[in-house]
Picture (cartoon, rainbow, N blue to C red):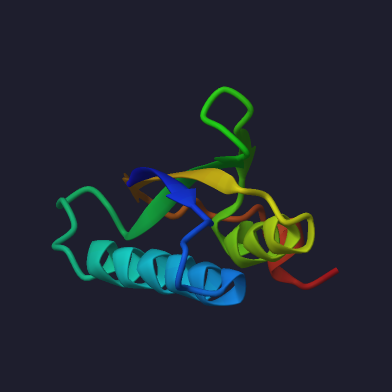
Length: 102
């Protein structure tokens, strides 16, 4: 998903546009996570970028998407760009020192 969300509409309130964008992202993530994984993969990872425009977009973690949308809402941005690319990932083993919890 590479999309610029426009946050202005003559009849829809600004907070409703933010909620609609969050809903779109949630649906997209769910749809991607439900796709069949390749044999070599354990889970779907997501490469994400967020910014006021495609040129200004910064790499973010998928868990930070809602926080960034809330920030855009608090700053009353007229639009924001969001890029989410699904990648098949494999889990890596932690070193023995981290398994003990110390």
